[in-house]
Image (cartoon, rainbow, N blue to C red; front, side, top):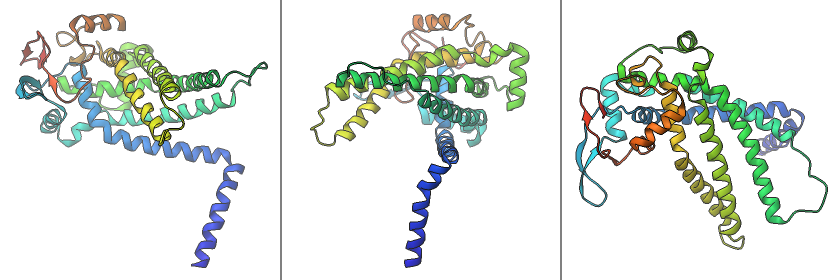
Length: 328
């Protein structure tokens, strides 16, 4: 027992030394850990994203059913997450829930490395404090939030731009379910197909609204959290740390709701007019720009389509087309 304890002490004492003498290896280990954790979460969440994307593009393979809402009133409801998943499993098996997983894992791994690298560069390039009078505590805190948000915005934007081609391939592999195509069957074949048919810009379809969603969500979340933590939470309160973490989560959820239309438009533009049934007439309209897509969805009241996977109500004024499996 004494030998084991002595060995543990030697290991514990050597870890900080290794981190000091080999910071590069420490950084690589942290990044690898983030990649592995992110990959695991991606695998677990992929079926949910798959179903969400199919709903976003308007695919409704199951007709509405008569159900009851939270108040017990009879309403026409659309199939939720589990009913949709059962339908996919019935057609493609359980493996069908993981269409597009490969390029999404690549996007996650590359995005984590790019984000970590750019974030580290931003930290090293931080500007020194300007000489002059010391700012007030509130001003200093707001300035710190703005600086950190700017660094995070740059890191996220770089990661998004680099990984967007994989994101486009992921979405198109998913949307193939609608027309039962096999056009995007592999990573290399998908890259060749997109480049041959659309050129280099085809890899960045829907990039602008996706960037806007990331940037706006980040700033809304951080600024709202700062306002709540500064003016609504007193440091003398008990469990202040837990309350601050809770406020960060709430503001993040609120920010994602506000920016959801940008995510929806980005996904639709990524598959728009790409040769798949789910992105072409008569199933879907062809949009020259993402602004046209936004305007069209706004006119039809569909900017929130796919935002909820449970308790989905029937769109007002829409008719279900059985043959096309969508609303018209």
